[in-house]
Length: 202
Image (cartoon, rainbow, N blue to C red):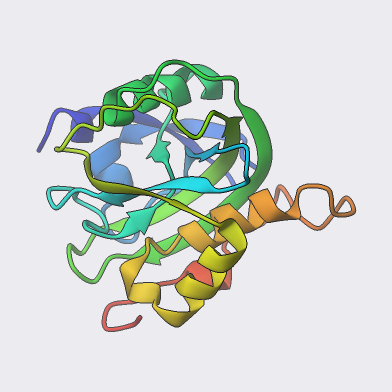
């Protein structure tokens, strides 16, 4: 087990209320335990989002394209502090101002590693310059690219195996900002069906 797999995450109920804690490793073993997470999208002035291809050594969905940065706040840690900590660790990025644009509860099984994601995911946006300085850690990130979010949704539908199963739900929260209230996932939502990835599935 890597050091990060021994870190603690906050277990939550379907409404995001804290229930306790578990290690990263335990929370991601089948059948999974619902826990708090975050997904960061760095957004350039032209609306493009920074994607990272997850490193080959990742224990969940390696070599899949995902959002700019993901992680878990430690029990009692604020989302902003946790997200900026992981931005520094994964991308070598300086702290940024973050805005929550939605919550995304999902479940996905990784057919490659046997691990699961069962997360109450806070989607966080940061507006950054297109030339934002980053120094990705090769143990975390295999590749980076900028993508138009609307075009990205089409690419995910066309080639889902190239993308982390949560990415579509994360990007959709970004695109829904400005729509009428209630268009985002309700706080009590348990699973978005479009994120499910079963062994032998997509």
